[in-house]
Length: 379
Image (tube, rainbow, N blue to C red; front, side, top):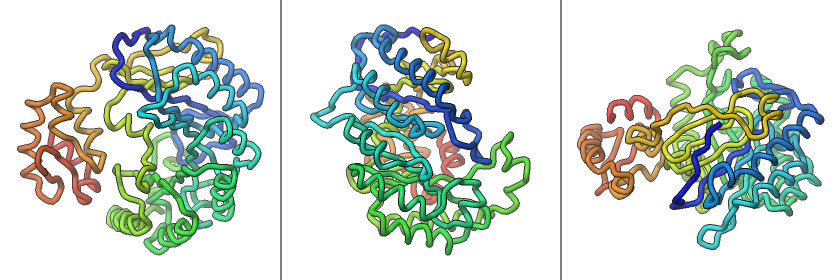
């Protein structure tokens, strides 16, 4: 397994915990996930806790984290077992500039319970991300979701009554038969919920999923309509006070996801759990997608996916996803000054897709829509 102790720690890392259990796998999902089993979930929790209690021995005594994110899968299915994992993680959690750690977890509307959410909030969880996807029942049905729009609205209200102030929801674009009118219906319903953060994802039809096998793409909006839906969504969310801070993420001031910002800024993070990924000291490594191997191993096994990560190309590809863009100062800190100056010259020629203001390069709204192509030209 990876053993790369941190000798000098410039800033706290992010900590990610992967919970692979779902009630039922969605037909468009290609993430590693398994049907929930109480016994298997208990064994899995034991293994996660075991790895967390040994994390400083594995990665160095100086290790500190100021964000903790439980993703999946559907982490809320573990219920109050999540508190046991959080307690184990407290050995490395720290405040930054007097701000408490951001502790997030994902939930689906059909898996929320007031008593569980209240217990989690009181134990230190302070951010919840709810997989709403749509507030139009016909779209939820086409996605194979187990909840209705009424369930989704109730889940947000339950989370708020349980003490959560920082609430995020997922919204999906490119759903079969989606129109500008139907996305408006979802956003109109969202406007009544006082949401702090929204992640807007394009539906991807991945090989090996039922959606791919059944040619669901034939029922999805074409590229032109999807572009119009995205632009309209951007406009509507801005009207609700949710500013775009990353290609797919919108937030009210102060509610940007601190954990995910670490990914886009090429900061260090460690993942615990089967199929979890890490980036540490210029190396990317991952845990095999095998829950039984993870459970039986004294410490999680890992394999290197890139031993020369965090280079200039990654700095550009990830940083330009952010509305703040990339700066000469940050490039200099990472010893990329020469490359940045060349990039700046190329960016100045991509008018309409990228802007150069002083020593900062950003993508425009049009550039965001074609981000892969624009970044490829820049590099």
